[in-house]
Amino acid sequence: MRIIGIIPARMASSRFPGKPMADILGMPMIGHCLKRCKLSDKLDEVYVATCDKIIYDYIESIGGKAVMTKDTHERASDRTAEALLKIEEASGEKQDIVVMIQGDEPMITPRMIDAAVQPVLDHEEVKITNLMAYMESREEHEDPNEVKVVVDKNHFALYFSREPIPSRKKGVDDIPMLKQICIIPFERDFLLEYNEMEQTQLEIIESVDMMRLLENGIPVKMVMVDDNTYAVDNQADLDNVVKRMSNDPLLKEYM
Image 1 (cartoon, rainbow, N blue to C red):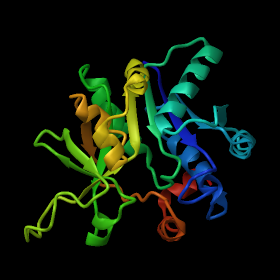
Image 2 (image 1 turned 30 degrees about the vertical axis):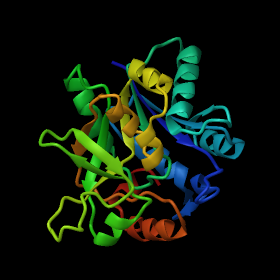
Image 3 (image 1 turned 60 degrees about the horizontal axis):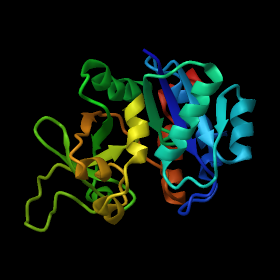
Image 4 (image 1 turned 180 degrees about the horizontal axis):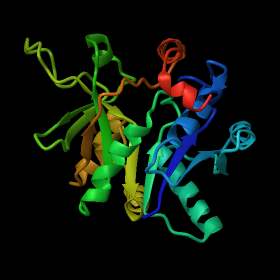
């Protein structure tokens, strides 16, 4: 069973241009993501997929593996799929599971990757998983940069949104505030199949790729984790992550 991680990254972020190279404690954010992913026992190798030479050169300079991709991709999954096919062509070896890991999650931990992959290994019918975690505050629940998810009793996704779901407007205070964490293992062939699907109405409305699967009746298994992790979408997020990572015990394993 071959399992690889692919981190799609580009400099032209609309909300935070250049964020993969943003400094966190003396290392670019994309460097933290790569090095922390490589600590996972489940991944045979980790690659950064990018259309920017500055990112490619940096990853190569620290001994990592990078793949140059087109600069026309609008979705991370498209960039991941192109990189996958290039990796397979160069190695002559077909992969089994591809873990797509967003390059703006610098607080990722190896056990998060391991937890995300396990259901795909254990259950043939599970073609894709997402991680989820509880949010800490109402402010985070209302933040449009955070993708929220509601799940059924078996932890399959019912709906994703950037809006605060479930609603608080009925006066219920004790609601499950769950967010998606963008570590997404795909069964290899399913990744390519997913990218051939047309975008769907709710996917566009919510600006959440996973809605494409739900609208096509394809289950998305959610896996709960209790690690505190925060995506970086703006300078305030970066400042928050820098503060939280300053005492992170995982740093000593790769810095």
